[in-house]
Length: 172
Image (cartoon, rainbow, N blue to C red; front, side, top):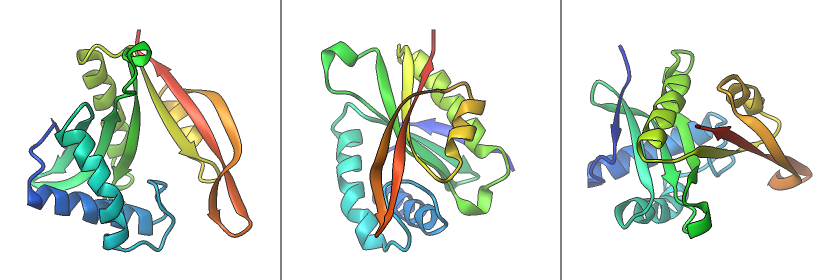
């Protein structure tokens, strides 16, 4: 089955629930989306509220990926909220459901993000990556370049500090 994308779907209670479920399942499968496993739905819900507000009230935008009617991928275009940075944005909460890994959905999600960003007039995209998971290779394969690294910036557990890698994709 193919993945289809929708920009700015209505954040209904059902979609909010699907997003929290996706976020929880991705985290508990080892995904680097703001938490370290194990995480509960309630913990995710607390952080999701701020993400939902940024999308509903603007200026952030939600890109949702569906397999049939099931939410299987998503990311958020997070606006910089600063006039001198209006020409680019950060992609956050980039995730694909663990059951859908290996189908090319991650690449499809990122390519759709590029297309949408260009359509929105953005000139570059930025992502941050948790070190130690090999995610830099994924983004490098999509054309992103490492532009900075904050050594030990992410404490994922006692004695386990990871680098936060800043990656950049010019769209011009």
